[in-house]
Image (cartoon, rainbow, N blue to C red):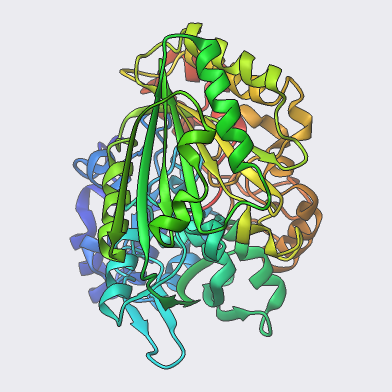
Length: 541
């Protein structure tokens, strides 16, 4: 953004502070400069707590796009240092007709925490990182700015407690627990949002409310699966448990250059893990790559109980197997964090798409054959690709589909191909990913939902139905009641009975300026806008 001309921006925040102290207000009400002044005041006039695009290294240091395919230019990024600054920022944005999104870890495949379009006000909650545990009840008050690694470490230090959550250390609990909160412990303990007991939420009018099963229950229902569309959680209260005493990690490698051999091995393993009666202490994921797939996971029990599953003998084709018993909780979770960190490099060109495979929509053997034939012979446009198959079931199915906004209670696993490229992702890569998903779906995509934590522009105008399925009508009703002006807005988020006349996010000039800095591919599919396919991505991870 240009800083030339007689603009107050050239004077900087120090000048704005000086004008305020002198009682001089040389700003036009409702102007961008007025909004800057409002945000500056909201964070107690601390220049380090509000950053604007015209400042040096804004994109690299402040915006930090996780996926370089999606580069949005927020109006500002704010860094509240206490929860009382959050409503002040929200009121500034709403008054000036701007959208708001929170950012906890910023770890998401489509940079949804930057708003999904230009001109958003981003509330980075990294300073809201306290953790307090009641030693009697085990209830933990956790600030939304904590990363998952922070959560695990702080709960461990607070008397050896734990809660179910994901496996990536840099994911923020703020987005994770309000979209699903899936991980290796889900089969045994449920999702993060399943153990959420209360949340402190900043609403679109700047008020702060408590939401639980008995207070603001509609809001509590909605934030457990679609949180970023309804407000900003500042503090969660989770039910924790003592750390498991028996933990075993395992990994198996199936290697072959034959698509048919790989498919046959996967079918055998698939039959084991899609059995509803499978021991819930067993949790695993599969990573499929060229000429191999790797089965890895954890068992929360004894080695003898793990051996009774007979994984190696029932899944032929395993060429390597390692079992590591006797792990402490800290050893286990750090091993998981380390393994995931290397898979998802931050600030890379990434494309991904997921589909939820339920127990009633399991793929046929023919579909699995088609999948592996495609993966072995298709052209991804890059050698850096993999398919992640996260198996669930177990405790995730203990609740009804409509118990929370998160609808995936009958899910057997989530299937998601990923490709990392050296530059802007091209059509060849998108086609490779889409064909992999269609293969596992048996070319019947209408039968399948998707996880709102794995957002994708490929879903198009049906994205809300894909993410929330039968729960979407209630979400829209709650949205209309709580945030009728769609202040907490993303194009793929829950809407007040879907889009009508939403307030402007950014001027056409702002959109075009960003588009010019992006690839011709993205500009061509958006008609000159950086808002890719008019979609956005739910949650603030």
